[in-house]
Length: 171
Ligand code: S3P
Image (tube, rainbow, N blue to C red; front, top):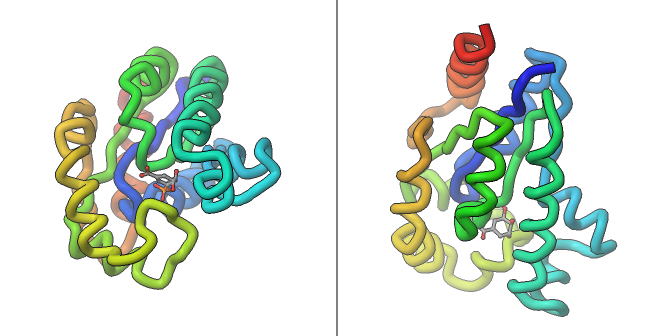
């Protein structure tokens, strides 16, 4: 079996949407880290942040990254904060093609404006997006493979690009 495809990027950069398209095209299973964490904790991401705190969420995320980086042949959709711990990226790089999806603040805001499932964007979403993007920009930009999805109306070309890259590296 081949490497994993690991999708990294800010909230609303399209990781899950693009991951689903790649899964449909390649038949590789899609593992969504946020959903797996919710299942393990038995509560939503919002509830984990509110009741247990962000550090507890990051610990779940770290444990799962360690576990999933030991698998093969999966598409792994990570949460936007996966880059906060460099060990997560280092682990994923060992067994996977890590691709970072980039999107500007305007594109992100447009994609997440009706969504209340992200605790870090509760309240004034625009300010939160600008602040968090600024603090993490260097982390996303340090990933070798990056695709800017800003303003792209369809996720299809992004999925295609990643499949082509993956196939060129696997062959
Ligand atoms: C987070 C991103 C979310 C989720 C949590 C924290 C972040 O995932 O893991 O709300 O710190 O950027 P998405 O990127 O799928 O929204």
